[in-house]
Length: 333
Image 1 (cartoon, helix red, strand yellow):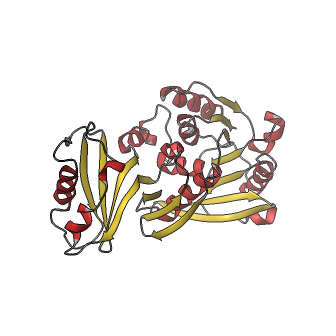
Image 2: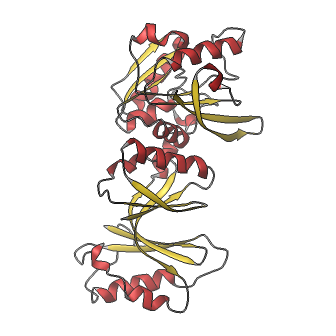
Image 3: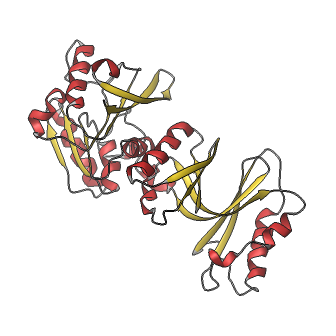
C-alpha cells in the first residue's frame, strides 16, 4: 500500500521527522517514494498502522488509490479506477479536493464523485455531512493524488488544549501539537518522563495517547497545577513528584523509555543563579535516565554532544518576536 501524509505547513521538517520516527518506533518497514513540501508518500506492506492516531503535525493520511497528471485524459483516468477496493455500495461517501497549486482546476470534486457513482451504477449514496468514507483528491504540481482518508487530525480537540484554556496556565507553555510531535519523535511506546513538567502540557499529550506518564518539577505549585491539568483532561493515572531534575535517578530509582521536556527559560523557577551550571547538571542527570530517545526544548542551541549525547537533529520554531524555541532530538552514544 502507498500512504500519503499531508504535513503541517508551518513546521514541515519537524512533521516529517514525527512520521518517520513513529514508523521506526513501531518497526514498520517502508520506503519513501516522494517527499516534497507538505507531501510525504511512503510504500509499505504493513496493513496495521492504527498508531497513526498519535500524529500531531499531520493534517491527514490517505491510502492512495490513484495518482496521475491532470490533463485532458483525466476523465478516462478516473473511469479506470477500481473503486470497490476502497468503497462499498452499502456505505455512504464524500469527495473533497485540496488544491496546493496557484491555478484553478474546475469541477475535480464533481468528476471524482461522478466516476464513483457511475462505477457503482448509482447504487452508492453520497453524504456531505456525515459520510462513512471520505475520498480526498490532492492537487500538487499538476498531479492529482486520490486516496481514501484513513486519518485526519482533530483540530478542534487540539485547540481545546491550548495553554490558555487549561486551569493552570503559563504563557510560555508549548503548543499541544508540538508537544505531541516531540513525544512521537522520542519513539516512546510505553512511557515518558518530563523532568521540567511546568504546567504539564507534554504529559497531557502523552496521557491522551495512552502512555504512562511521569513528571518532576522543583516548584510545588507546578506539581499541583500539573495534576490539576491532567485531571481536567480525564487523565487519572500519573506519577508527578516534587524534586530537582539534577537528581532523577535518586528520586525515581529507575530509567525511563524516553524523556521529553521543555527546559525552563525566562520563567520564574527555583534554579541556581548559575543557569548554565544548572542546565549542565540537569542534562547529565537526563543522559543517565533514558533508554531510547530524548527530546529537549531550549531557547538556544545547546552543545549536548559535549556532555555525551548524540545530537540527531535540531529544529527551531519562532514562538513570538523575542523567543525562538530549539528542539533537540537526542540519543545515547
